[in-house]
Image 1 (cartoon, rainbow, N blue to C red):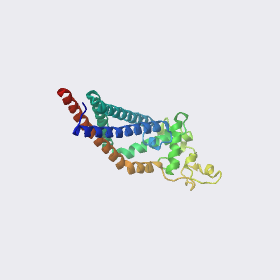
Image 2: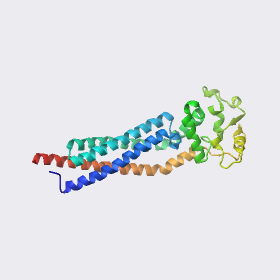
Image 3: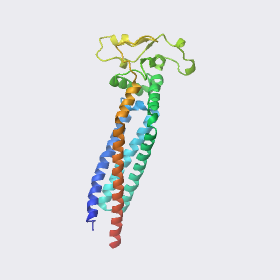
Image 4: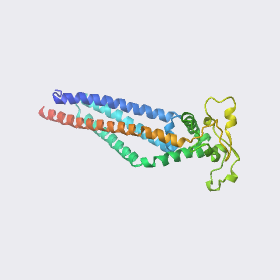
Length: 268
């Protein structure tokens, strides 16, 4: 005999919530795979290459867990199975604790965001750009400079000490102005749009310490990237908080249904 009365309403609400979880979980999975496979995703510049991929794999794992939990929840409600409902409860509880921990860490370290992003972008300019082993990083940074209309981390002068200009950075202490090239090159992505033929090529060669050419972007990418993150900071926290509240509600419903199913079995 199936559950009825208030429990029947809770069952329908649980199905609705788990459909939302399915959509959320699949969205996270698809987004994670996209970010892992698309080298032009600009968010990757906010962290070191390895840390970015570790974060994405964790994000992907959370998406898979939410999708799996939604399956347990829907099937458990339809079958009125305590085992499946308990499985749903455990999976969603793990996801919720992970989200709260990640949110608390992000909120606690938000003042360090500038330093984290600046260090990551600076490292990409100085160490990674143009290297054969970091081709995806080069594509990402080119996309960043073109879309944000910027050049370098703090400005075009960053490229003077970059491996892109064959500067040996194995001993950073010995890098001095006297040992640098008098002229240095900047990437093509630093050039402004709609330039005439060969104008970009001529503008890319700069003299160290000299005036910057008007045909290239003058502002660095760090400040623009940080502004984008801060603009979306409130939205990210609001969405996360809404999902956590939805998860808390689903946990309450799952416990209620477990108790109702157990009492029904005892009466039977």
